[in-house]
Length: 110
Ligand SMILES: [Zn+2]
View 1: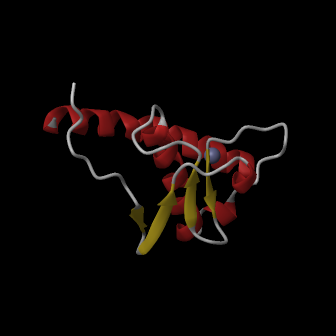
View 2: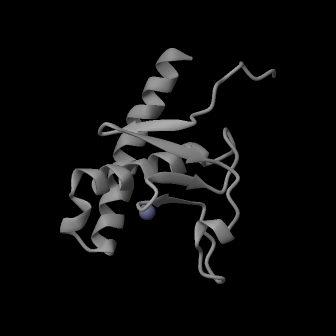
View 3: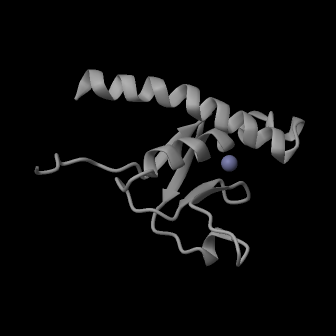
């Protein structure tokens, strides 16, 4: 089946900040520990989202949603009120809740 001409997401507006999204980022540039495999990260110093995957590849949409949520918590100031474990739990919770709506919307419009 031919893919529709789709534009992939190059940046995401997060609370007034246009957040660039980079794809196909190497593990070295994801600042991963040598033993750790990281699929994506939110770089809070550069306010950028770095993705190891290519646009439209399997799981890229959920990785992007996950990192956008980290960015929302950072820019809103909520991230600074919790430790990194609590932050990760909240991000995963919101990711799961919101992905249901995103799937629903995608089914409505495609
Ligand atoms: Zn995370």
